[in-house]
Amino acid sequence: MASTLTAPSSVDDRVSKRSLGARLLSRPEVGSLVGAIVILVFFLITAPTFRDLGVSGTIIYNSALIGVMAVPVALLMIGGEFDLSAGVAVTTSGLTAALFAYQFSTNVWVGVLVSLLVMLAVGAFNGWLLMRTGLPSFLVTLGTFFILQGLNLGVTRMLSGGVSSSPISDMDGFDSAKKVFASDFNLGPINVKILVLWWILFVVAASWVLLKTKIGNWIFAVGGDAAAARAVGVPVKRVKIGLFMTVGFFAWFSGMHLLFNQNSVQSGEGVGKEFIYIIAAVVGGCLLTGGYGSVVGSAIGALIFGMTQLGVVYAGWNADWFKAFLGVMLLLATIVNLVVKKRADLR
Image (tube, rainbow, N blue to C red; front, side, top):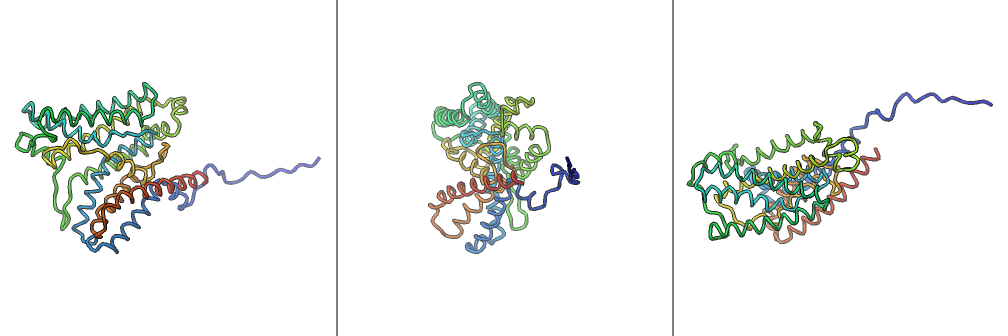
C-alpha cells in the first residue's frame, strides 16, 4: 500500500511573527486612543476656546484628578475585582489627615502619615474580607462605601461641628506638604499642576509592573482564572489583597491632593467618583470580567473624560447632557473592548 509523506512545515505557527496590524489590535488601549483622537479633533473644531494653548493645562489637570485613581482601579479590574469605595476613600483620606493634625495640634505631616496607615488598612480589610468570605467584591466594597460615607460625615460633624474639616493652612508642615501634593508651576502659557507629573509617573511605574514583572503576570492570571492561577502556584490571596491595598495607597495620595489644594475637605465629597474611575478604566480597555486591560489605556480614558467634560462647557452646550454621554461612552467602550479582544484572540 502506497503511502505519501508530507514535508514538515518550515515555519512553526507558534513562533511566527505577527503583522504590525495584528500587534496593534492586540493592545487593549487601541480603541480608546482612536476615541481620544476623534474627541480632540471634534472639540478643536466645535469649541474655539479649546484651541487656546493655556486651556490645555486645565484639561490635563482635570484628567489627572480622575487618572490618578484610574491607575489602581484598572489594575484591580485586570485582577478581576471592583472597589466601589474608592471615591469616598479619597475623602476619608483627606479628612483623616486634616482632623488628626488639627485635633491633636501636630505637624501636618503626622496627619499625612496616619492617613496613609488608615487607607492601607482599609484596602487590606477589603481584600481580606473578600478572600475570607468569598463574597463578590461588589458587595464587600459596597459595604465599605457606606461605612466610610457614614464615618466621613459623622466623625467630621462630631469633631469640627460642621460638615467639613477645619482649615489647616496655618499649621506646621502645611507649606512643605502642599509643595509635594498640590503645587504648580508655569510652562510658558500653560499652568502645570504637580499632580499631572505624579500621574505620569504612576502610569509609567504601574505599566512597567504590569507588563515587565512577575507580579504583573500574577495580576493577569488571577483575573483570568483564579483557580487555575492558584493551581500553578500564584499567591492569589496576596495578589488580591495587595491590589486592594494599592487602591488604598492611591486613595491616600488623591486625598492629600484634595486636602492641600483646598485647605479643608467636605465630608460629602467623593460619592459617585468610583463610577468615573471605573468608566475611565473600561474606556481604556479593561474588561469587566478581568484578565485583560491596560494602565496606559486608563490614562487615555481619563483624558477622554477630561476633554469631554471641559469641551462641553467650552462649546457652550448644556452640561446636563454630560452624564448621558458618559453612559453612551461606557457602553460603546465595552463593546469595542470585546470586539478587539476577540480579534486579538483569533490572531
